[in-house]
Image (cartoon, rainbow, N blue to C red):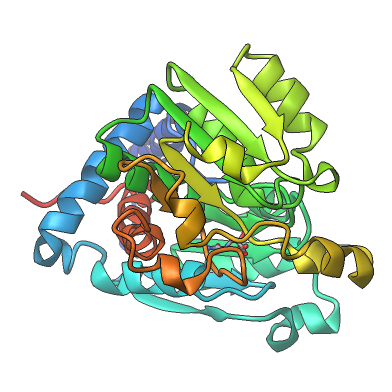
Length: 338
Ligand code: NCD
């Protein structure tokens, strides 16, 4: 370290001080972004993200190195196929690398480590992380202690915002719009976090109507019915019969009965096959209605429907990769290549 005389040392400390002040100002103006809830992004921000995802879809090689040197950690305390692997594929497609764990048993959670402590460690090893946890609010706890952007990849029966981004991209690609749609949500509307997030996101677009199709035990929670749908004056109906609703729908969003969130197996067995979409039922639907499903499916869509051009659930899973690429770039503030 070269010797500094007193005036030079004072100048260095003034520069250092103003650097810190600037840093604090910047951090205040531009705090680190997380995605914990679909409403963390404004409608305009979602529009830009979907436009970026669309560009990625059509120009994949252009994005091959934009995240070179960056690391994504996937912290999955609950089972996953699509969400975890599509996050990993997304980061690899961007030229970054991935690390993580795929079950609580293979992490220090099995030894009793808290989410707050784990995320502090992960912040030293990675630039961004995607977390799935069985407890509602786990990703919020993580974000408070995190030094890197946290993406909620599903917290209990609460929210699943990246599935919603995938659903929005799918709906926009298939229907050309996100407004003026009648959307049927069918199955386990109580525990299905993808349903909760999708309703939260879709109520921001004009002329959207919901038909909520479920058995009485699996109706949407009050937090959605009262605080979102009724509070915002959104038209919706709650019905039990899928056949009667089908003809009115532009989108049918099927969901699995969420076995892992039931308190007793008898109830699950009684309710698990309450709706099965098959070829015969598809005859009742409009020619331009599309069937979405976040997957995995169990019995609720018969495999014979897969060949119907209106079955969009596998395309939906592919859109999940593009939208997660766009999300990683957005949260890491990576420049779009020309
Ligand atoms: C969903 C989930 O985990 O909530 N799956 C997914 O992420 N694609 C839906 C489900 O498990 O039923």
